[in-house]
Image (cartoon, rainbow, N blue to C red; front, side, top):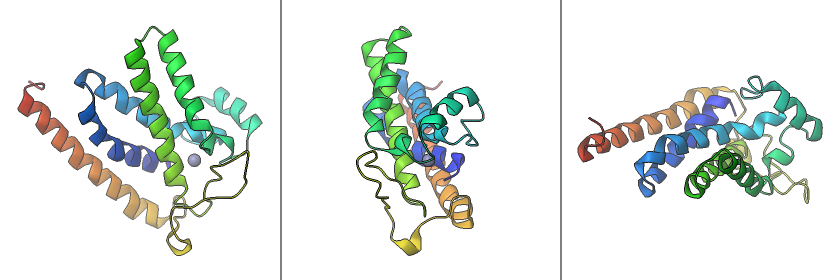
Length: 179
Ligand SMILES: [Zn+2]
């Protein structure tokens, strides 16, 4: 999937979660989700995020092929742990570090879900099994960067995210949090 599809799908699927957390963390949570939605593709040197943190990508791609260990269920708790430690060592409270780590991990999880809708699928149980998994039957699988993704999936998630953002901002106005 393209970076923008990963971002829009992750945002649209997580904005409803904002209702469960205090308003102070909303922006940081969504930022963590967006970063998480791009992070697994650091294993691919040409990806959107890799081109911005090339050295990190170079390092990660030495240890794994594309859609290898960074695209697994095993990596999810590790993503949570890394984000939590980085935030907490950076001086964030336990609560805030947990929220950010959670957002980051959820972003990564949605990345895996979206990639598993593509024709290449994802071997989510690596290193224990090389079997690739798909959430769609063969004829519906998406070709990355193809017409289906660009003209249907991306616009659909962008539309959902826009509606959610509208509802969210209206809610803020209603509760007086946005003056
Ligand atoms: Zn990926």
